[in-house]
Image 1: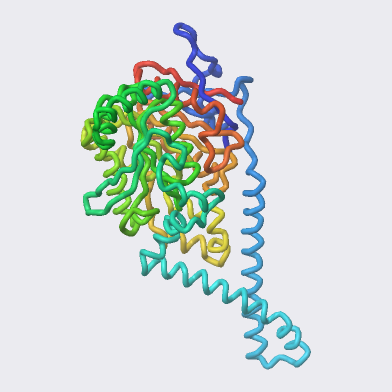
Image 2: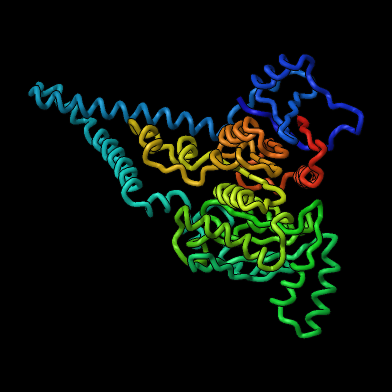
Length: 462
């Protein structure tokens, strides 16, 4: 069951209750059956039905996902048939079958052996994932693609954008972030734009006339950062196989800086782009922590920081948010985009693993071989800070059902001071920032993060 697309809107005016279904217990039961979106505030929840008052219709799978599902079923049937044919050929050979029967077997033996070899290759890959962690790292992170330019359209040109200005980020600097285990990460610090841009340009010009270094100028801007909607800075954690030069990462930085007026830090994990090291789960957690520490050393309190994790980055963002909560220094808010429950769960449904799942016992082996990397399901339900979850209904890389499953776990836990799940109708994996209503969604969400004593976000069907 899936949600239709939603957009956030301001809550009903004071003294006026939003429309709710009649009958408390019956309404809650109907909402559960219909998978109605939930907004939490102070450990309570509001169930908001469709404007018509009826249950929401299931959202059909996007056409590419339906095709992939049929491909997986077809491959399973082909592999099983090949195994049976191979077993039958072996039995005929052992039984000394008559010559005409054996000619029929020989005719298809080449194809059967090719399919058997493909299955053996898949099993070898799964075995390597078990005994050699670096194999699983390459499969899970896709980090060579961040500098080879092998992923999705637009990445080939990304390597040419060596400076933020070449990427279209006017007021930004290159930074080097050192992790606690000695790795150096490449990053960009982007100054606020939009309404703030003219004032920022004036201050930059004055300081440069005074012969101050760019490092000192940008640090001074960061130290004087003012809060908008309770937030002054944002850290963006990018996805698998990406880098800060990738077009969608640049667009997120532009959106946060120009539209929301925030200081933005985007960076590359170890092994991605020119950052040193090799990515493993523990190391990427160090990278995620180092990015926040870089801001804190420059006088930015965690309570003024919004973190945004996309895809792979959602697991890093949730780790940092939980760590800060345990340290008693919670962040202002968390945005999860195209998030998953865990990498282990994602491997059971993502299209790139379709051949692995199709071989006999493939899905069973995945569940036992793949470690539960970056488990959002273990962390996000424990978070008490405001959470906004975005997921495109036409996401092919991490299907919408994965985001829905995580949203159900978060809303069932009820720990977050506010939680809003926003299905982006018709949106894919990368381009949420191009959604026309996203600015209003986030402003309403951040206003709710600043005023936690009121419910000021609800949902509305498109």
